[in-house]
Length: 118
Image 1: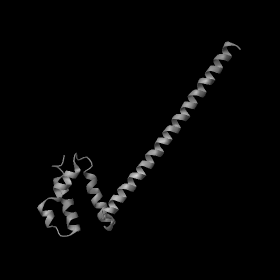
Image 2: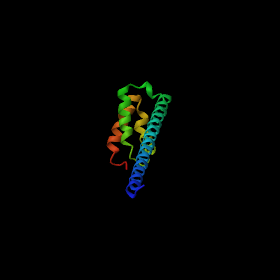
Image 3: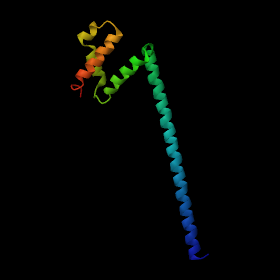
């Protein structure tokens, strides 16, 4: 076997190793994406179950969409639970008689207090 033949075999073997590693990496990334999708689906199911258990599914879609938009605005708030509790502890909120009135008050409060929440 000549030196060129050995070099060609070595180059072919190295190319095959690189291809095998590339396939292995692609498979690992595909597994990771599948696991992430499954985890996301489980999380969506849990959140939906929490909403159902809390009785939120009794509300119409428009009300739910509005409330979730308001909640989404709290995403970057350091302590969103405390912010919501303070808004709900407001005496004006306690006098609100209907859930719709409470929702509109909450929307208005969050809009007016958005500069204070940080």
